[in-house]
Length: 121
Image (cartoon, rainbow, N blue to C red; front, side, top):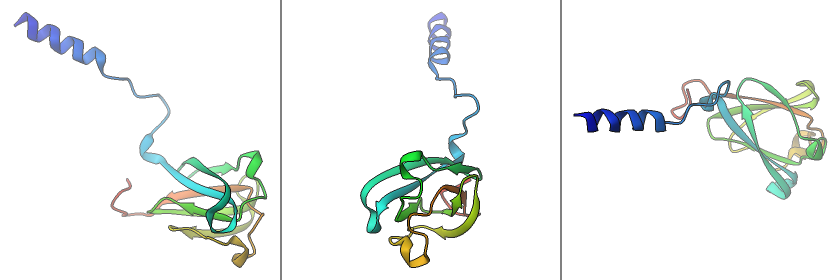
């Protein structure tokens, strides 16, 4: 009996504590590339859903293709803090932002989950 209690106590202490302030259920991704057709230098942003995020400096006004996770809806913005010209889109993304007159304009983005999508909260 004491062995069982000791074993349970050990297992309880071994469980990792979740990081405060981070809800992994709200994280989505946006794949950005400097060239059309997802070519050239690319990055995969980790975004908290429903929050505006400014693009990392090395990609500001240099993105020519973008693709969000399946079940995610994103809006690209030409200015920081989700202001300026806006381009909404969803999965699988846009291979040629120039078709929408948005190549090399991206400065910030906001992504949200599509309500009722099977893989999202």
